[in-house]
Image 1 (cartoon, helix red, strand yellow):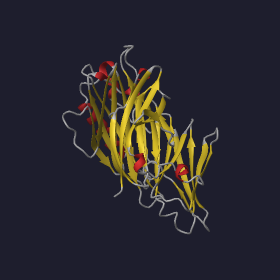
Image 2: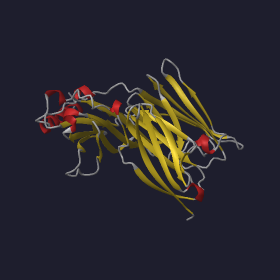
Image 3: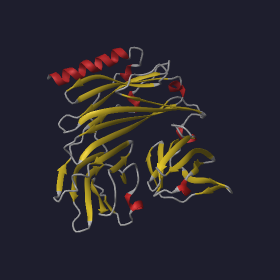
Image 4: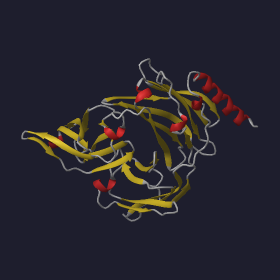
Length: 374
């Protein structure tokens, strides 16, 4: 047995000691799962004679996958420049690719590819300084592992406590670990509470979730995720674990991997994300944006899947629906709809209302948009 295996065993034993009051099933043995998406490589063909820059990402997907390309802070490039072309080639045996043709007149700083499949999300942040060269670039991608236990492997005590290990394994890749974020949305009846924690920040006494790094072995980073709330005993919890790693020598300079965990506890009919619609991070937001720039309004809800999402604007005559470009991604029970305000002017200032609804349930979030000239 090599030192790497001994290291993992010692760390897991330490986690079990920390979780002395937890049920036996919380002593989780981490194993590398088969990822629902494996990114294989990237190809960039730079623009020539005023044409477009073509970017292709090859990947393998084991089930249905959502594909979204964005630039800068979440804007779809085809909504900014209709000459943008996107082609997705998906096959039943898994080997697939997505391509985007970026017109030479499109102005952007960052290009991001979002891939979502089952309870996993992958974000590839591409360094477009490389494609602006005059040569073609083809690069295989070495994807790192985010290893999270299955929901049935996470036990909850009678005091509403749970602990489980998470590993970010960058071994055999060119990526270096950056950070780990853990989010939780607790739900019981009409009660909801959201909290988040980062691996580089100490936990505060009032937090209901913490993410503590407990060991490093080369490029293997092990964390202890701890939750404490009475809601865990009788309600439900949606936990999202996100890891970010970077490689300055790659076209994909940053790769974010996110995995969702849905814990169901109790049989109360009032408990259940399928009977709720909530904005976990608050129901109001102020956005200040410079004139002629682009702004986004993000409506992130947890609860019923595929709700109807409508954007309204408050006017002198009341509240009227607004037709602006938008797109939706889903990591059940989380649904994120992003509305885009493009090339804003003073007329775009005002109060907007995002309303989500399904099965006679609804919830709203208010955005106050201020367009400034400098």
